[in-house]
Length: 356
Image (cartoon, rainbow, N blue to C red; front, side):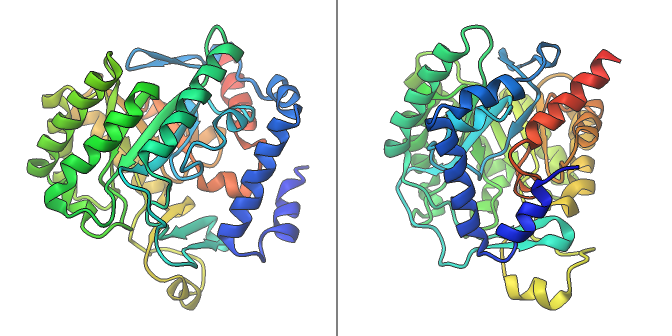
């Protein structure tokens, strides 16, 4: 019997969601700082049979933590103690910004979902870069063979006009690419005004081209470049992004970000309305994110890596995404409901299937 769901109900379910997140994240970091992380790591380390290669990088497990949990690179090492094969940090912007007004994070417990309108709150690229560099060096020392991977997710600073978006993304690429194992261009959050307009292929092409060139120049090596798209794109737009990714020889696509849709929820309509605007993540996104993955796989074949995220809760969900064509799978929302041993349970389930 798992204890965490009861603990969550008693300790966190009544608390402001953002405050609960900060407390939980601080607890994970304290466990690492105290040395307990070393013990945890021995219990949660992915089975070697789970090692996966994507865009030339070897991951200890195909399952990782999506962007949004560690926005500023404060807990990369601590989170790898829990068994995640990679940690995607961000979203990070060229300039520091406080994000949207609070409250801005809401749980829909009945739906095992979250609505957020955080607004890319972060310290800015120049402040985060040294943390990434230090974490990468520490992981290389700690895992001399195959270490957990660090992804970096970058987005547009809110006060920057869309016309100046490329230059803003380049600030982040220049600062962060040297410490990144891969870089993600986020043009799909619903919480930065106008950001999703950048998903139009005519706008996206020069943005991705410029970021890719600047990242490689700053790092002195090829930094794998991916783009993260929304589940709310039409099927035709998804096909257009797939063609663009192939044309530009991107390394991958992450599908999907949060949705602005609210259909099919079990939570009372009044409770959902009280949350207001924002991106919905969690179990309700499962079906659509899988649909997008399958469409992208059909369009791209084996030409690039597909990273599936949205509604992933169990080892069965992860395996379903892998079977549908994903190279890597990410989760986040279920982490809030399942607790610190969630990734380890998923890795154990994946390993059991592979060895059966």
